[in-house]
Amino acid sequence: MGNTQTKIEEFETPWRNTSWGKQKKDFLTQTIKAIEPCKHDLKYLRILVVGPNGSGKSAFINSINNAFKGRITSDALSNTIASRSFTVDYTPHEIETGNSSFTVVINDVMGLEKGFRQGCPLEDIINAINGHVKQGHEFKPEKPLSSGDPDYIEKPAPSDQAFCLVNVLAADRIQFTDESVLEKLRNIHHEVKKLGMPQVIVMTNVDEACPVVKTNFQRVYYSKKIKEKMVWCSNELGVQMCHVFPVKNYQEEIETNDDMDVLILQALTQIIQLANDNAKTRLAK
Ligand SMILES: Nc1nc2c(ncn2[C@@H]2O[C@H](COP(=O)(O)OP(=O)(O)OP(=O)(O)O)[C@@H](O)[C@H]2O)c(=O)[nH]1
Ligand SMILES: [Mg+2]
Image (cartoon, helix red, strand yellow):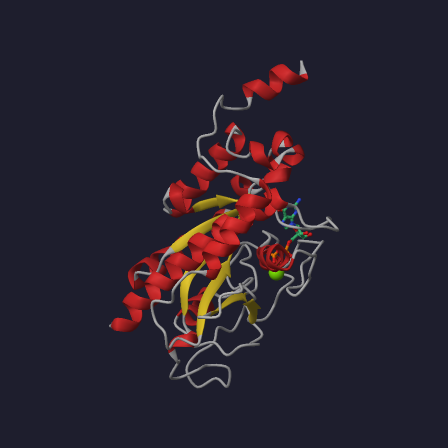
């Protein structure tokens, strides 16, 4: 009975091909290490994460660090009670990728919340993308930053700007996302599209969304549920499927897991490559 159910929920062959385990993880870390910067004088290659509160943004940043360090870290504080945004300020996290040619920084932000003037202001996300937000700025839902504020950078340097937007959505909750939050995500998407900036979706909580994947991460591309949710995210935000990545973040583990790291690093490789290409185009203008 259990087996029959499992079969019904899975494709016979994976719809996205990948290898797994330590060898693949090592290959991905080497790939990241070998990426050549498109702009040699760029101090930081900045990446911005956005998403509903509690979707796993901070946990994703920690998971990336864990994958590189081979141990559990908690640089970006993550929350267990997800009723309101836990992260409230604009926090940069330097990622030790092992690539000496450039420094990757991922900026964590306050989550988007339902309702007008709740959670991270949209204006601040757009300002952050364009490099106008000072590091450490505490977001104020009712008061977006504007020119003249002490935390507003009037003349941003290229390394203050972000070059890839990462939308973080939790697989087990996406279909219940409040319409006002989806609207905020779509608005950000349109603004970012105008800038010609690449966007990806990192779909977290795949363990909570599919019981088969929870016991074996290698089944992620066999799972019909996971694919259905990835397609939903792709359609809802207008991001191509090849830029949608399922991940399981570290939350209760005490040791790293090579298969979890493969999913995390596959997403990161693509994010860095897209950001790197975008830096070249945007800074050439
Ligand atoms: N099971 C599971 N739990 C996760 C996963 N990712 C994050 N979590 C948990 O979800 C909760 C919220 O994660 P956070 O990383 O704090 O979420 P956030 O998007 O930073 O939230 P805000 O800062 O409030 O906007 C934490 O308890 C995490 O441990 C995942 O992939 N699987
Ligand atoms: Mg957070």
